Length: 262
Image 1 (cartoon, one colour):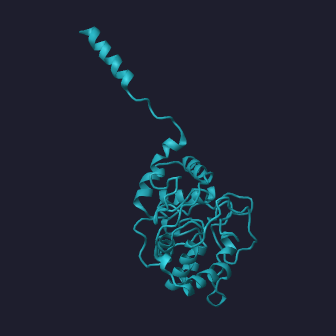
Image 2 (tube, helix red, strand yellow):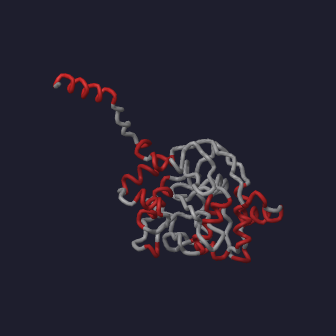
Image 3 (cartoon, one colour):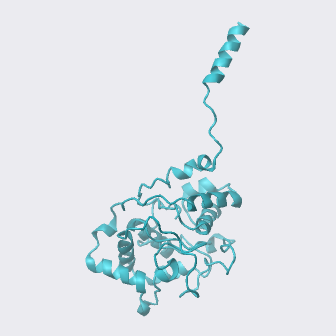
């Protein structure tokens, strides 16, 4: 019996699968289930590949610390250290997969006049409403700016609308002065829909990368912009003043049902 038992034990060991390799990609497999590097173009889980590392790092901290609210994200990062969050941010920032076709959304049915209004807001802003142009902060090519301002292309219109709604409802906040909350408050629902429809219709250049810099000062004070030569601004100490880099967000007064990291 001992001989048979030993043989059976050895056979079981031989048949046991090897443990997975301890790579960062393996450790963030849960992230990849929603934010897959192989783009699916999901309407609510946004593309995070290629976004500035500082921006992604800020957003991961904000979910962990309660400054952005989405239970799945909070659960995923709730016990992770700053160093680990930085590794995750650096990993996704270094990925540059092709952009998938945009998913159908509210922007796909926008009238020509609405799309034209969106382009005007993106490129020129609206001086009468004291709304700066999107390009003045997110870069002339709208691909974001290192180290902490995200690009706006490759995002579905419904996701953009949802994030503006989160800023309007104050369920998404940024380091004071919260420039995106200020801008969201000045935009009407129709203007948000116009911006999201135009942005979602743009075909991103697969070779595009975040800009190294933009002209300063910005047209509106923004706590997300780190000091010259410094690291991204630290997250606020209380959920009421959470840190976040500037980016478009939501239309409707209600937040997105699925607000994945952006």
